[in-house]
Image 1 (cartoon, rainbow, N blue to C red):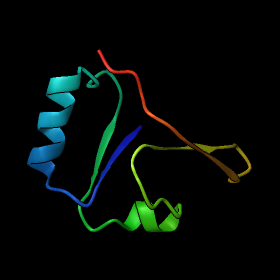
Image 2: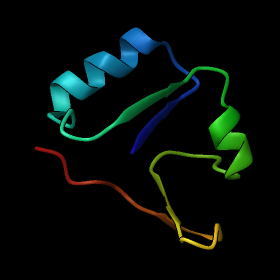
Image 3: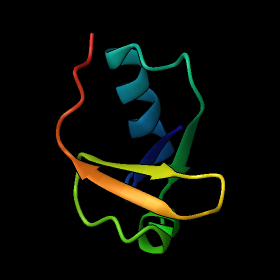
Image 4: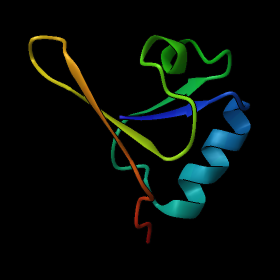
Length: 65
């Protein structure tokens, strides 16, 4: 799942269109609630959620088409 934080839904849709990332679910988090809950403070942060609910973060850049 992609989470577009702190920007408009229109900006998220444009990003998804430009990067070809529409093959998986995208969430518009305009208020930053998901980022806050997962303690994300910068792009590009990857958060992996395990079945037990614990998380692991990684920083880096995603290679986009």
